Image (cartoon, rainbow, N blue to C red):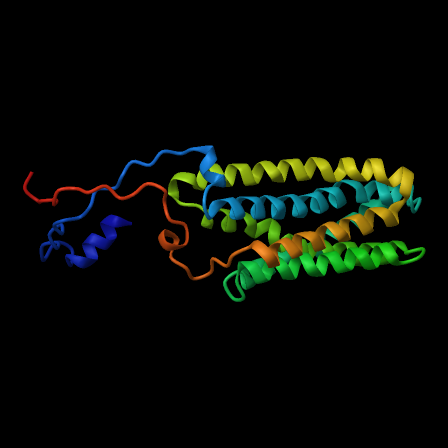
Length: 250
């Protein structure tokens, strides 16, 4: 890519490239410390994005892993019918990823996350409050919940990377993804413990409440990163080193 740019600027070597400008400061070597994730402006960002990862993936993996069992145990469907329902669930939820591509730069990350969590939370609460919900009602409301929450599932990695400077970006993204794993483990475990004791409605109500908590956290603490310069949005802790002017000679 750089060679193509140089070729275009020099007209394929017909004219010399511009000289290296003098006085360019050398990039300072940055050190990565876990504690910097909780330092200054990054404390709120870290806790906020962890909450978003957790709320999103508790519901995502909880529903994805347990709905096949719900069809066969709660609604006593034969395996073939349960598989057909689960396939429809996945197909309805799929456009959520396409919505992400269209909305992430159109309305911004923060608004999109609030929209996905808020709609998903309301749908889950509606499902939990329905007396004697039919399999079709569960399928439709659960699928559209996953469609809404799926917008976060695709975009959270991008958002997390934008919240940190270069030296913290991998560390911040790694810890964020760790909360994905914690959430994906907690969701199925929670349903397994809750369902036999309190029933399916309690599971839906709990998931709805969790998504609305995530929406509230996003509203109160998340920042918008759309269209902002990363160096200004996420400044480094390491000051730029003073350097002698760069010359083209040596």
